[in-house]
Every structure is written in structure tokens, then in C-alpha cells.
Image 1: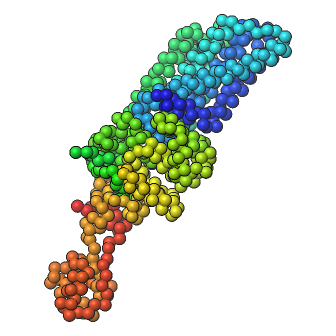
Image 2 (image 1 turned 45 degrees about the horizontal axis):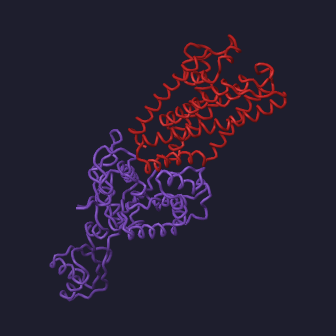
Image 3 (image 1 turned 30 degrees about the vertical axis):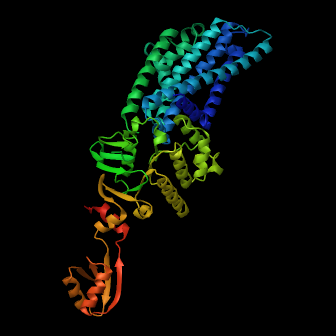
Length: 254
Length: 300
């Protein structure tokens, strides 16, 4: 199994697309954090380096989950698009094992993305702290953001791999994911918030958007599930997608 | 009794109502090259894909050293294949493609460079596969197939897209592999392409095997050799040949004789006192036999 996981990580790191998307993800982290840190009218007031403010920057990494889901989708759909799935299955006929290796590969990518994002966030925080001549307080809220980010991004990667195995078509999978996350879920969130908050990415966002941020947005803010409920709902979607993917991978011709 | 390296029995694959492979059975012994011939769409690729588990068989079995592909403990070290529809990521370097396969199969990394050198791609190992010519991709496919040093090779049209030099190289490479004791099943839609290479031939048409055997056996079964003879008195010669049991057909100023070899025809001419002006053996063209078989003819 170790060799399979190494192969899956190599598949991700040996194509330019992964690096470009990761760079894009870091850009999202930089933009989200910089707006908050340096243009304080967008943030929650003056930057003082408090634990909630540091946690907000850490949340930006988890908030860039769209990148992780796309990389995870590609790890599966690229195999079908370029026909490499045939060679993969000739080396690893056990399709369940293959999917498990891809899930682990996705986890490694997700955690790598988190570490890189936190490093970028730390650099921005250090600059902001120097500019404002304040110290940085790293407490329970920041640590919670980090572990929530780790869990959330890992689950996002699993969801992406499973969705990729289900849909197979790269164009369909990416288009559907982008339209779903940027159009369908926000539309539900705005028009039918009682339903929208239960949809997968909205449920996951409940993990990353802290109670304080939601409270700060007031009535204009989205309806969010409790973070643990949101996490459980997203896990539910992930499990259903993964089980369906395993079944489909085992029963359908390649 | 030992197993053939590859044993296919009653293999059937249906896609909905369409039968792509219909009750196909054959063996590929170790040390032999078996040509798997048929026109495009005859079922060659589907058969190969079903053997390696990319398609689920509707019925029948394909056993490699006595085991289905899905149950092989070390599949890459047992079977190497170049199968239709199996490709490479165009954005990945050649060496990375092999390293990925090697990692997954538990093959030592240095083997990747050895295989690239074996197929003549050592100089371009850092080149992205999307920039490879079709011939280079075919060679890379062979390198990937050989990575695990397998004893069974399934190759779907490996010479497709190659220039004459490349085709020569593939022939020599496959002969080397078979002489090294490996079982090789190589598909093609051109009999001439593999006739000089293969030890045995399987001809498939509309999903069914319509002929099998050595090229010589196929030739013989298709009517065997005949003799073309011309003389100064064709009527007398025809009478003598028919008396000896041969079948004689007039063709463009000569006679075509079936059922006798050239020396027997010469003997008959001597007996009839007829001087010959032409005498030569005729072999049926392999492509003609192939076309006849794949167009609907069947050889028992």
C-alpha cells in the first residue's frame, strides 16, 4: 500500500497543473488575509495580533478548499481523460485499494496545502505585526482553526476523489463543482437558507467561518450550521460519495 | 499437467445487446509469439482488455499461469501489456511515468532508466510525453510493459504508427522476448505485418475465432499450394493431369494445377510426351487468405 500511495503522490507532483492550482490557492490565502490584515475596514477593526485575528488568517487556508477539491477531482478524472487508469489498474487490479491509495494521496496533498498556506499566512502575520508594532497571540482559537482546517481540507480531498471517480469526465466534474460551489449553493444560501446550509460546501464552510465572524456579519450574514454539525453533514456527503465511487469503480468497465 | 502461460476459455464480452467477443478460446505457451489478427472492430482489443480486467468478462475465463489477472499477487511482474485506450499523461515526463508505475508495483527505481535505454528513449527521459511522436509513445508503452520483467506480454498493435525502421525494431524486440522464454500475444489488423514474426496465428472476425494455427497450416487449409504450368500441348497435358487426380484450371495462357506438386506435374508431362514452357509453384498470398477469412470465409 505504501508504494501505491507514493505513486499517487508522484502523480500529483509530476504535473504542472497541481503546482499552478496550489499557487492559485496560496494567492487566495494571501488575498483573504491581506484584505483583513492591511485594509482594516474589511476586517474586524485594528490589527492587534490577538488570537481571534491570528485564527482568522489560519481560517483563510481552510477557506481555499475549492483548490483542494479540484486537485483531488483531477487526481481521479485525469486518469480517465488520458487513459492512464488502464495502466494504473494493470499494476493495481484491486480497485478498492486504488481508491484508498488515492484518498491517502489526497490527504497528503490537503495537509501539504495546509502547511504551505499556514506558512504563507505566518509571513503575512509577521509583516502585519511588524507594521503595527504588535506581538502575535497564538491561543486556543488559532489551534482550533488549524485542526479544523486539517480535518476540513482532508475531507474535501476525499470528497473530490470520490466525486471524480463517480463522474469520470474531467470537464463535467470541474464545471459541476465550480457551478455548484459558486452558483447553486450561494443561491440556495440566499434564497432558501434553511435548505442551503445543509448543502455540502455550505456545511463545510460552517467549520471554517467562526461564530464571531458570522455574528459580525449580522443579519446580512449567511445561515450556518453549528461547526460540528456542519462537519458531520460534510462527512456524510463524503462517505456516500466514496461508497458510491468504490461500487462504481468495481462494477464498471474502464 | 502445466498451464499454458495464458489460457483463454469461452471468453465472452457483451456490451448491451452487442456481442464484442464471442466464446473465444486459445492458449499462448511460453516462448511463443501468437499473432491475434482481425480487422478493426473484430474484437481484438476487447479481448485483450478483458484478459487484463479492464473489461469485466460476461462469461468465460482468462488465466495467466493458472490465475485470473485480478488475483495475481504481482501483476506487473507477471503480465506486461500495451492495450488500446491505455495512455500516458501528456504533461508528465517519460521517466516520471515509469517511476510512478515502479513505485506502485514495488519495482526498484533504477529499472526505469534501464527500460528507457532498452527501448531507445534514454536520451529523452526528461521530455514530456505530450511532445513524443506516436512511435516514441509506442516504445514508452513497451518500456512500461517490460518494467516488471513479466513472462507474459499482451501487445495491441505495437507497430501501429511506427516507421519501417521502428517496425523492424519491434519485430526484433518481440523475437528476443519470445526466445527468452516469454509468451507474447500480439494483435494486428495486418497479417503481413506479423506473418514473419509469429509462431502461430489466431484470426478473429466479429468476435469469434475463425482460424488458428501456424501460417503454413493456414496456407494449406486455404487450398494449399498450387502449380502453374504452360506447355506446347495444354489439352494433352490437362488430360494426363486429370487422369492422375489433379484439378486443372486454365489461366491466362497456362494451367493452374491443384493436388500435385511441381515434380509430379513434370512427371505427368513426361508421361504425356508434352514439352513444358513454364513450371512453378504458387503460394496463396497471405493477405488474400486473411481477407478471405475476415470477410466471411472460414477454415476448418
